[in-house]
Image (cartoon, rainbow, N blue to C red):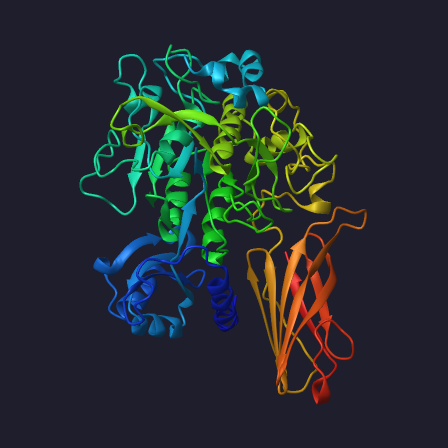
Length: 553
């Protein structure tokens, strides 16, 4: 993709990010202060050229937080002057401020009688069907599908240690701390405030606490090992740390990733890390958010992610705080969820339990279910697991898919017994992938830069891809038209996808919203926008007429 195109769009995105940022980054008030930024290199840039680009502005190892070669990125600390110089470098496509997102929760076997959430989603029936997946060996081995918990950390607890209290290394074999903490012990996840707010420990217990040990609670997938990535300090998580954790979890072999985090920030660098996980056959599950409105929360709203809404435990209703929109894919119990907590949340008492509510609590029910299914069916792809979850959901709420519950509340027993669709329909929706695309192909619906042509004298056009959104920037001598073109799948007999969105016309004293609607060949092809007259992107005056062509793959 042309770096000039990406840089033109980066200016556009900077304005959007400023408007969307839910939590401002610490220290952002100091105009001249150095800040964390995410540097996106042009695809295919050699590591030596990446190093040279950073070194050319004085950024070395001491100023580098993360190197992410899997997605051609680096997280560094840069001054405004260094950032300006990086943005001019031909090897760099974009430089964006690292931002902070929040954990998504509302705090509010002796305990198993109170675990209505597991009953709501048929977990025990799933265990009865596939006892090997359920496991129930308090002493391991924990050979189920690994679940990565990217969160505030996981503290040692009896739910992860068995009766002898010495199995924590087996149940939680991976512990990583971002940024590196010299006090943190990666062997037993202790010191360095392993989990200072108990969010990650609570999430991990719901997903995969040991069962049949006579203690506390069982998790949804008891034989799954837990991979802990502490990317959050308190409730706040740097985006660059979350990216690093996603990539590390994928490379470490996690089969399911739980992200009980969210915010209104939709940066393409964030999407790159999500795509990396999905492209490597990982089921990515994320919380839909707790604002109780229709706003999109990320990473849940990225394509290919299972966005999880919360239901009232024991009822067929949406929890009041759960966000609802057309990105919600599935729902799970999220109120009054009892699970393991760190001593910090219980006055220093070890092996304690607490009741929390939130989409953060709903999400590990789904992550645990995905791991249980993958444990029972190790030959299933991530797409088949997602298809089983969606197509067997309990259709609560409005019949069919809806914005509150997506496909419905997860039914683990039905999903684990599901017969996958034949090859060619991995999303299991009854339409061939050739028609509507497999949502687990992360590159399927990207708008890519193509041969852009126009017969309008003096008009320039930039087309770029951003989170599955095609951004068309059309500038003419007398005005600028900016089109955000959101690609939406439409499974029809013609195999067409609809490209729709809003164009902003900006001129002397003019700021106007204009709808766009374009039919695109599904799975690849070329489409065009006409300029002039009453067309969607209206460039009037002497520059009217002409077309803009771009490609979707």
